[in-house]
Length: 493
Image (cartoon, rainbow, N blue to C red; front, side, top):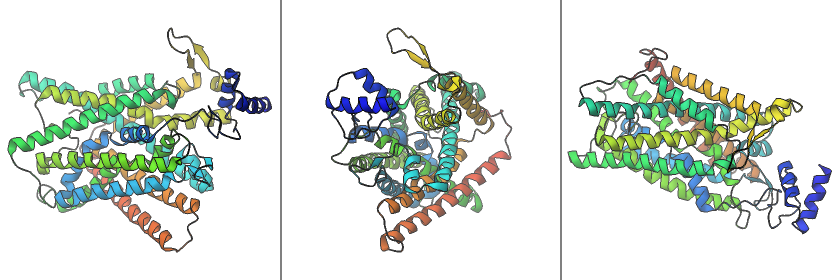
């Protein structure tokens, strides 16, 4: 290491020996001052702008959550539905600004950077809270992997089914099993999860962003055209009517709808990672991130309002749990196929984006525990003509493959898209989107206890906790009612 530090200080003065610099940057030696090629922490200059950050956020946020919004709006009705969507967007925006202030500990322009959500918790709160935060975060990421596998298989089946309906003219009920599709998705993820690092999947993010807009827009367009065709807005001010569902079901489902909406907005897990791509001050990364958050949350909210409201207007009480596969729409079948193919492509990318922090955490832990093990440390270079050589690591190969296999099996056991989405939204929303950002912000800005500002933040936190508990209860109730009629590995649609 000593030699590296000397090289680093020499290189700040004259940028000779590029290859040595790279050795240094791998060791993450903190450089004392930012230079032409390096940021103040010794990493290569970050180049992110408001626009790249907004694109990353939109990619992360507008995901499969959008598909359950028409259903969620139908549970809540024309008054509460849009109101709740708006409130969640406001809370998400506000707590994101709190979180982005915690990217640097101390001074917003020169403080120590935190590269991940966990590091921010570590440097602001420390101790037990870090472990709790880690457990919740990684549990949530595993859940997302399962949710995405289910969603992707449902979309692949929808393509198969819509073509089968089309060929038989609607006479064949077209029952298919979801298992082969989940296995196919799993195999693709095993291949992609061998991409070693986050930096190398920015193109995947771009593709995913285009895809999510494609299917959301098709869903929106079909909703609008259905409203235009029937000439009336369906639905009621208070949502799904008692009679269609019992009084108790109505309450549970309204709670579950809160979870679904929370899930649709959640991205605080990867906010710090996105902020870490933004170029150095001035203005401070936090300022840039606040603007990016405002842009992306606004875009998302407008979009969600349109999708949720037009889906509800098109179907009223019968709004399906998953807008594009619930077969509210049969025609034009090729357009549905495009939308569902876009969902699958997007989910393949999103799965990787969400699993990267988990992969990195496990691999880092393994390296810390067994520093001498050749399995973990050794990288075998495999030349690929025309590209950089691929670094194969046995441990990475085995562990990531196992991870994908396990999540795929769990998905085959529990294929209830809506309930899973509700549970994930409920479970991740309060701790990750509200509690930790609020607590870290209080520490970071040294807000005195019982001051007005402190009280307001605590009230916000408690209110969101209550919402989270309600949403979790509603989703668990949904799982319980689904389990009554359910056989493992036998789901067909």
